[in-house]
Image (cartoon, rainbow, N blue to C red; front, side, top):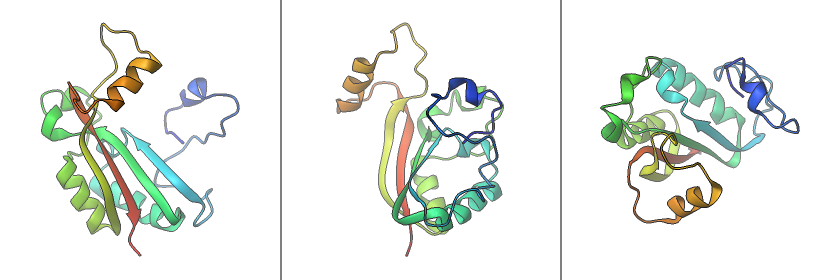
Length: 153
């Protein structure tokens, strides 16, 4: 799902996609999601909209379903954070974990430095380089965080 109208141009033809708002997930049955992945989304929403998405996801996630969030960590990306004028909310790995907890989720994993802010560089983007980076205990230039959570029961 994405709200960008050109999203479909980048999706494999075999993937079912939906154009819409993350605050409108009525097309998904309750308890039907095992793995929700939000990549660079919540910094573009107000806290009220983020809370609304979490409220909806609490209904849509299966019993052991997880919400997996990848997004800039303000603690490490503060210099570049507002180079994207569409950023609305600020979260560090600490504040987003607190926000999730306050909105009915149990945080099960926090990786404050998971990926670089962007893959744009002089180096080519290649699967082996990405695998090597993810496997490395050293994360140079990592300014995006990974947070995993489950709905509180």
